[in-house]
Length: 191
Image 1 (cartoon, rainbow, N blue to C red):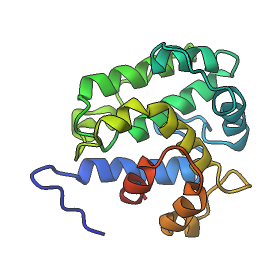
Image 2: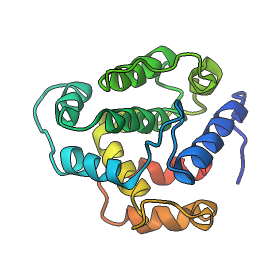
Image 3: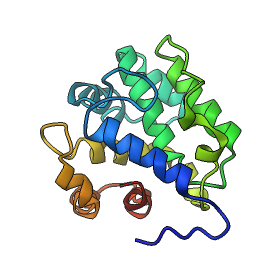
């Protein structure tokens, strides 16, 4: 797969994606902490309180998300912050400051401060490599629903090394009938 991104240097973003793959998808770990966040029980909680509890009010995405996640344990809120971080790795049309602000805000709902010394929160990692367009940002709630299904695709709650290596097969499996499609374009670059 091509890694050419014009004048943008994709290496810091690709390193971050590799870190996410190894720590979170293969080990149920965390991008930013030593905790075990990417676990099946946390995904089930996200499914119960977010995916199966849509909010069609006119409030902002983050206002609705905060209310939907209120009954979940702190680790689920941290998981969602990490999911947003993954969603925001590639877009270059969202500023580094806004990306950091959103991830910090969601993480803070856990009652903990986001470890700000993480190299995965640097401007080099968060700058993005291409514009995702307005729909990606407007439908962020759908992208989060899709990512929840994507990560929970394996019934064991874990991705196998083979599934990660064959990212397109997993994406195609989950992509059928899903309301969010941006991941099908972006995820192979992260895997």
